[in-house]
Image: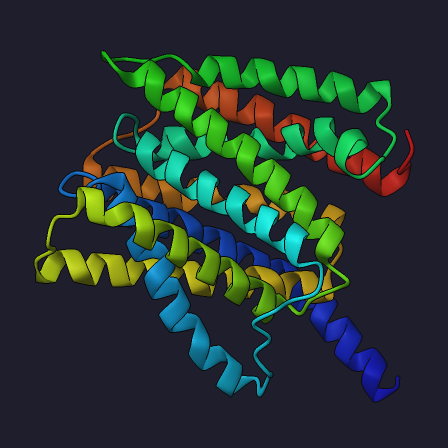
Length: 294
């Protein structure tokens, strides 16, 4: 076996591990944000996430000896993509003010199904009746999750669903841009856009953080950088259809964080809904792997 073949095999074997690590980290960032929104406005928490994401991302360019490109190719599409991610972050962090972390993460699993439904419009991909059926079944699973237990929670679930829709569009645009920009520069441009936008908004609702607040904001930024880094490393060695099932590992750390830190454990209807959404997502990706045009 040649050296390049060995490296390719090694990347393919490590890709699922990178994806699992990255997805396990994402709820830790969201959980830290949930701690912050109890004392600070969600706009300030979003600002901290992107500002410290930007700061912690810069050393990676030195580590990997990559040149920074402040004006990426397809700048219009890059900007739109970044705006959808900022919107996703803002909506989800706001949702965490109303609903448990694990429940919010469960609703977020509808994103791959939304992505499948929107693929014909954004990517001109053909989606057959098998996938449309799976999308509808997955949506029914989401309805089981959307069962508020206290006043105001309906609004939180609505925000989480909106965040999932924004994230789905962000993923579709990421797929369109995959061949035109390096992962680090794409992440950098997203971080710059997010920091600039939130720096304009945050002065209108600013509360000077104490040491704990600054440390938690720093944590959201660092974890955000690391989670995206591991996910990017995963996609370097594996196809999206093969790695998609591993994204559901998010529910593990989200549930553990919710139980340990907030004492919140999803109810039986939520777990049934999670199972339906996961099964629908896995079915779609299995169909894509076997018959891309089915």
